[in-house]
Amino acid sequence: MSFTAHMIASLKHNKRERVSAFKKMKDFKEGKNIEVYFDKKVTKYQLKKIRDKIQQENKYRLRKNIIIFTIAMLILIYAIGFVKF
Image 1 (cartoon, rainbow, N blue to C red):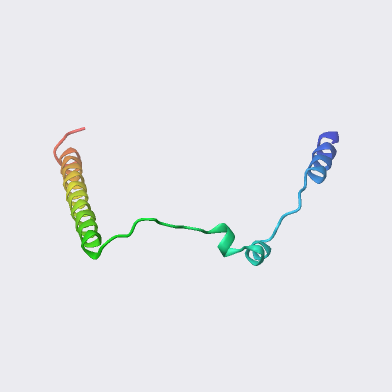
Image 2: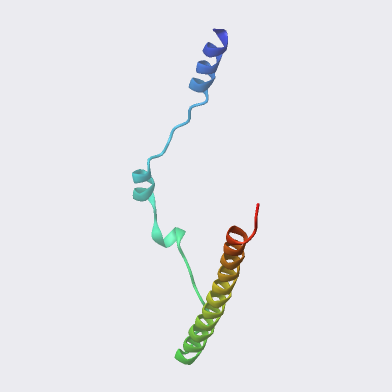
């Protein structure tokens, strides 16, 4: 019984003041907390080049994932269908 009393007393003493999400949002100052600044400028040609490169990388990654998934499925179908347990 005394264990329960000690546990309750410990919980009461360890409580802390919780700040609500609404209060955090109210006190949030955008200019102070979020500041992103870039020195360098990018041309439209460079943006297009970056976009094309990322799209090409994504296509390659998608093809690779499809091939790996297909091979895994074929192995699984072979193991289920043809291998005798």
